[in-house]
Length: 338
Image (cartoon, rainbow, N blue to C red):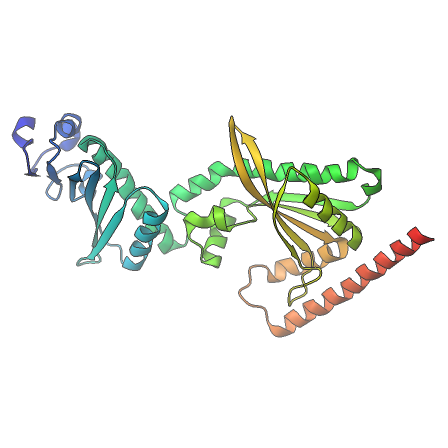
């Protein structure tokens, strides 16, 4: 039976249970064979492709039917982003058909046998549909969700490294012992990252590049001068590469947020591998600045917009706490000079 259907050129396969014969069947194909799956009687997994053919010695063309997927715009975005960020395929085209069906033609740049191409195509077909579905439902694709979870231990180590160095600031020099009140840290979970991807309108494949706060450390200091002492320590620490500093104490937000945000990168050794330039966001605040942030966080965080009267009230509270910070700093200076 196998010999009867293996021929050069196009093969239409009727009433054949490919699961039974596929190992022999696909291994025995000639390079110029074109497989048409449209009338194939077999498991659903294999009927999800209409065609697979070799374009040249290193390029395969796959025809994939997409059934009952109404949002062709999401399909287009999925294929466009995957063609840029993945090595799955080198080009694609999408044709709209009846009953909300579509067909995607994908070119894969891989030098492989038709047997390997067939199995490779199945996995990449599933990846395309999964990614398009994730865009439609505002979720992370299975591929990106797995990558986030796989990298969490790396970001956790980077976070702990920063946390340890900030703790050393107070223990290495007795003069610094009371300058830091509290150090808090966290690594964003996958759901938090997913929410931010869609709130910010960021391509899923760019999240590790675009997000600076997957790992974050917040350091609360006693006085304003302590904040800048810690900032200087971070800048001079050879274990960190400071990428950016945003001083929102000098330039507070319109609503009144004050603090200093530093993005650093550091190298991590994990499971016998070195991971370079892992980003960590460090936030430095005084106790009064932290109090303002904690009071307003639950009310305003992730809000698309804040009413003007609420923003003005928040600014008024921030200004009052700034006066308290300035007064506390003045008292400290007077005591040091007395």
